[in-house]
Length: 222
Image (cartoon, rainbow, N blue to C red):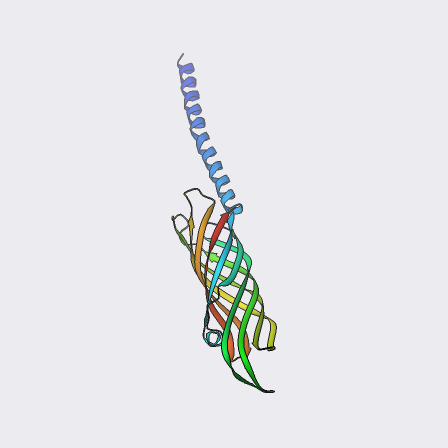
């Protein structure tokens, strides 16, 4: 009888240990699955933006007007909660008209209404750091870099001088993402971007092209 009692107590203790460990193993498994999901499938977002441009430095002396013609589209894949990498493309146009006057060129003088235009189409890769991923308003710091195709033209009457070329552009930026709700997959994004293009032209008195852009648009999570 005593032997049977000892065996029964031992059986109860072993059963308790086994059933007590099972939930911990399942919990550990779920944590591993969540970690794997967050690491390899974190998602990202796609932005469609309007861009307003302001020339600075020598470029502002070449064209001093504000650019109301700007567009940008980009996508970012989040490798974790803080870091995202992707790429995009944009288009920007500046234009300024001058009063009728006489302009001197190497070939001679021309009298007429002058117009200066600058257009570019850029393609870039991007990286961004999101310091507060759990906040309602999510700030970010980013850097874009890539090739840009640009056209610079000065026109007086029927005559014009034009330069078309490929250059390299670097664009640091800061901004905010504001979702339209707690679990919304669409939100509003806005930021300031500084564009620096490696271009020099004595004729236009340009030592690099630089301009700021205020960007604003919609973000779509995926």
